[in-house]
Length: 259
Image (cartoon, rainbow, N blue to C red; front, side, top):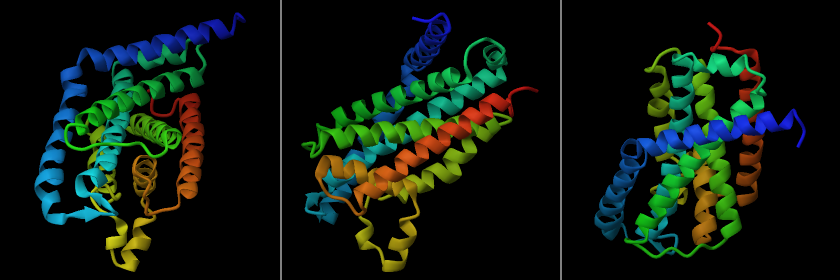
């Protein structure tokens, strides 16, 4: 192992370990609330309201909404972990020590991003296990399912990083989740098929990126989708690359961090 690579790998392992230890240490605040919230969704929307709605897309309403609820938990937790962790590092000025160190900015970015991905995936696994108490899940395409959930967690971890860079106070890190992320998620086909909408609103819904992620994940589990899977995958790969380059540029420039 080269003398240049070894310090960066040690730094990456340290950042990832710190991020995982951070959300595991306060698991009653990071892992338990989303699990309780999703159980309430299963009970209220799946059991109570679902009985009145009936089948959707050839599946029971509970089966139909489970993939969307899993993705909702992955999205919110991957995003929330990075935005809170990186802004906390800015607030405490510990990020300045990392930036003046010999560690590559890409290592710093990857470390925070991987932390968000791991929290999103961990919550996703918890929600998936809880869903088995309410319905049976049979994965239609395992490879596609894993690829979609990892790409989605990566995209929203990077978006959380962007939010944290531009945030100037703790209120700023809640604006995007409240006024952008939540509406996009609820209008992203989690609870319904866009085929139920009028043609105009179907077209408008196609502009919602969360719709593509939710439907691609639903196709991986149930084998049904409202959109073309190839389009969704292409979009997610391009979004991941563009966001990574943007985040790396912001980190190298030190924008919003060197004050």
